[in-house]
Length: 443
Image (cartoon, rainbow, N blue to C red; front, side, top):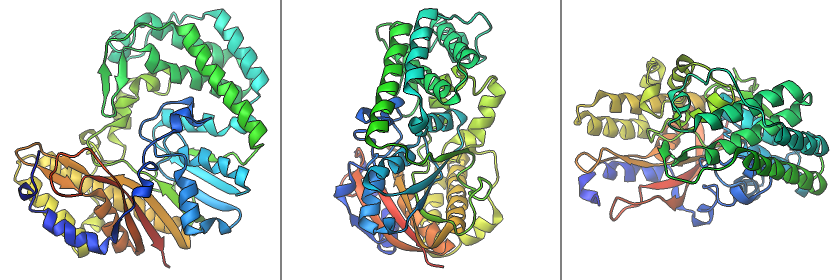
C-alpha cells in the first residue's frame, strides 16, 4: 500500500477538485464500465473491454433533458467499437431520433463499429446462407503469413489457425457481393481470433495463456449465428433506425473528420487514459489477420500517431500555444506539480508523456468546443491512474486535467462525477477513480 504522505501533491489536487465541482455519483458506477454489453444484442458481436455501458447515453439524456431537440446530433470522437452509436440506434425504440457520428483512429476498431451499426440493413437470410456455405468450404490460405512475428512465428496463434482464418476472410471478400453481409461475416472472423488464439487480452497487452485448442469451423459458426440472431431480433424490435456514420479519423480534430462548427448537440466519449497502454498492440492480431495492416512499418506508424497516452506515441512535439495556456489557472497547478514529481525520477519520457497527453487533451477539447452548438454538452468518461511504483509514486488526475483544460478553452464546468473507485494501492483517499466530466459550451 502507498500512504497519503508519500504523495504531497494531493494537497494541490484537492484544491483543484473544488473548482472541478467534484461530487460522488455512485449511481454511475456500473455505467462507466462495459457491464452487460457482452450479453446485449449487437454490442456483444465483438468483445471490447475498453467500453463504457450501453446505458450511459440514455442516462445522460435523462438527467440533462437534452433529448428535447429532435433529431439530436451526437458525436463520439473516440468511438471504439461503437457503443455510443449502437445505443443511439436503440433509442429509436423510445422514439428518440438521433443522428450519430463516430470517429475512430484504429482502422480495425473503426471497421468493427461500422459493421455493428449496419445491423438495420443486414440481410439475415443471405448472411445465414453464406455462413453455411463458408462452413462447408473449409478454405485454407496458401500465401505468406503476415509480417507480424506474433502471427508468423505461431507464438500467439497457431500457424494452421491463422491460415484458416486468412482463407475464410479471402473467401468472404471474393464471394460475398453484399458489403453489409460481407462485413458482418468478417466481424465474425475477427471475434473468433482471440478464442482461437493462444493469448488473452488482459487490458494492457496480449498475455500467453494455457487453454484448450478450439476448432475453427464451429467457433466461426457460433459467432455468425449470434450476429444473425441479434440482427433479426433488433430489426423486429426496433425497425430501421438511422445508420450512424463512422469516420476513420482523428478525434483530436473534428473539423478534419468532417464535423462542422456549431453543429453538434452532444458529445459523449471516453478518450484514452494516460495509463501507458498501447491499444494498437492489444489488437495487433486482428489488425494483421483481417488485412488492415501488412507490414511492421505500418504497425509502428499507427502506434506512433495515436493519442499520446503511451511511450510509443511520443514522436510529436508539444504545441507552443498549449504551453502558453498551461502557464495559468488550475491547469498550471496540476501540471507544475506533476512535472516536479516526475522530474525527480530522472526519466525524461515520463515528463514528455505528461505534456504530450495534456497537449492532446487540449487539442481534443478545443475541437469539441468548435463543433458543439452554444449551450451544448461534452461528456467525458476518464480514469485517474497511479504510476512510479512504491519508490516514486505519483497520481495522474485525468479528470482534473480535463476540467482544468476545459475551463481554459472556455467551457463551463457542469460537474465532475466520481463514478467508481479503481483498485486501490492508496490508503485514505479517493484519487484512484473513474469519473465523468461534464463540460458546457457557453458561447
